[in-house]
Amino acid sequence: MIRAATAEDAGEISAIYNHYVEHTVVTFEEDHITATEMRRRLGASAGRHPWFVAEVVGTLTGYAYAAPWHPRAAYRHAVETTVYVDPGHLRRGVGKALYGALLDELRRADFRCAVAVIALPNAASVALHEKMGFTKAGHLKSIGYKFERWIDVGHWQLLL
Image 1 (cartoon, rainbow, N blue to C red):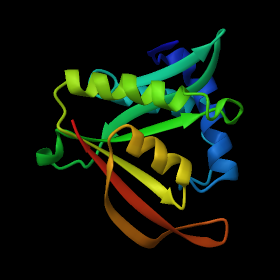
Image 2: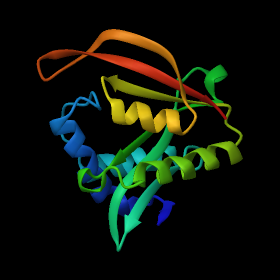
Image 3: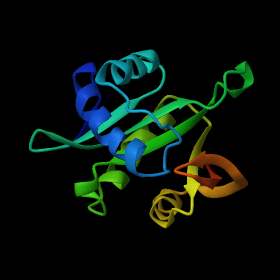
Image 4: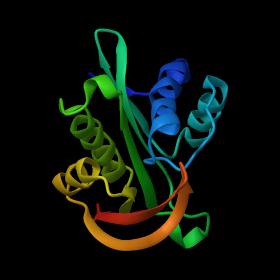
C-alpha cells in the first residue's frame, strides 16, 4: 500500500534512511538522523512537497519525497526527488510504486521538472530512474567524499 507519509512515520523512515547513511554512499549525510529530525523535515515540506510511504502488513518498506530543487524563486516549479527502500524489500517493485505515486502527485500539483541526484556508480538507481522516464542531464566528478573515497554524482531529469 502506498500512502501519504505522516509525522508518526518518522521513526520508521529514519530507520530506513539510517541504513543508507551508515553503510552506503547513496546519501552524502554521514551522521545518524533521529526520528525528531526526520519529523522536522517531513513537517517542513507539508503542503507543498509530497512524501509517500510504502507499507506491507503495517511495516514501512520504503519512502519517497520531493524537495525544493533550489531556493531561488525561478526554480519553484522544479523539485529534487528521492526514494529509499528498506534493504529487505529491494527489487520487489517498492521503489517503482513509490516513484509512480510521487510523480503522479507532482504532475497534479503542476510542477514542471523533477531532478534526481544519484551517487555513482549505482546501476540499480539509474535503472529505476530511467524506467520512470528520467534521462541523464549531467555528471559531476569526485564531488563527494565519504568512507575515505571520492564519489561522482549524476543528475537525472524528468520533465513532468
